[in-house]
Length: 409
Image (cartoon, rainbow, N blue to C red; front, side, top):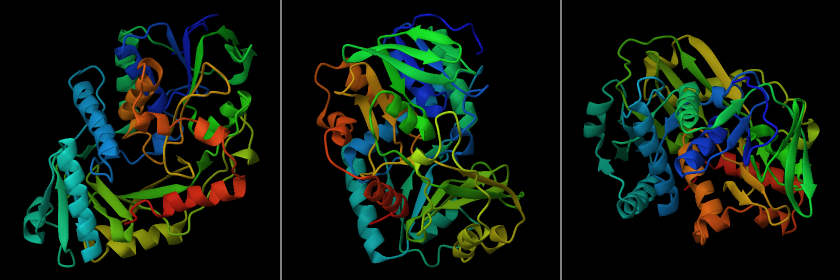
């Protein structure tokens, strides 16, 4: 990965996490050549991607978003067939638990969208759901939305699989590369300045995660890409837990989970979230460190205790924490800027960076290569922020609301 930096590449991707590597793979599969990906760390997938829980759920609140997730699942299946570098994809299915009639109605609406998108789902009674997760108590559950093609993967393995396949298609990767500036000429990108030299290029693609704001500023763009804290924990092994058990989500309790190394992985969306202002740290710096918030993590366990008392009393082995980025409207920022031709965004992933990486790559391909992208793709353009009026205080609060209402009705 630490290759001699070329003096020129047609397309340069900034960021070696799941989104950057997924974009590289999607562009290469679409026939693009002369692609270089640069990453500041000494390995790919070290920062936000490394903290991901790895769940991939497809039922969503619109046909477009369902198809996006289906694209990712199809890609993970394809990558899994290569024994040299697999994403560690486990298609175990998922159970969404409804605890109220309002949530049942939402699940019924989800199923209609899934049917329209061509995604197989079913509404199960508690007894049938119990056969799929025998150790879980479904006594409080009103209905369960089952999706057999959902699953989970290992985030680091996803990145390696993308890089492996992309390399075979000619994509080059360079680590230990710190971006320092974007050279502009007559309203378009001319080159990328780094600590290891300047790279002439036609397009720069910003997939820099928690530093996507700073890279955009180098291009003269102010974009509301807000890092919001997220945490989950993994217990020691628990008797009866195996890798074949489905993922689960309990939206009313804002919880999600799966089995990881025979232990319980349990996370949730905090009702009072904590964000950091990207303007408070430099491109050369890092977001603030995160210490485990034990009251929050214990609250996750207490909420889940009625469903699985044994697992929530098990010793916690690992706490994962990071700064996934959110936008005020809860949508990705994808596409070329009208302010600077050749500067392309692939950021603001709203906690879908890993699971949605292949879908995001597909959307980016559409935005760049199709003569008339769909209205959905157009709606993700960075121009919606650069060509409108907004302020940072409101943007940060709205991004927090997106996080806090992640499972909202």
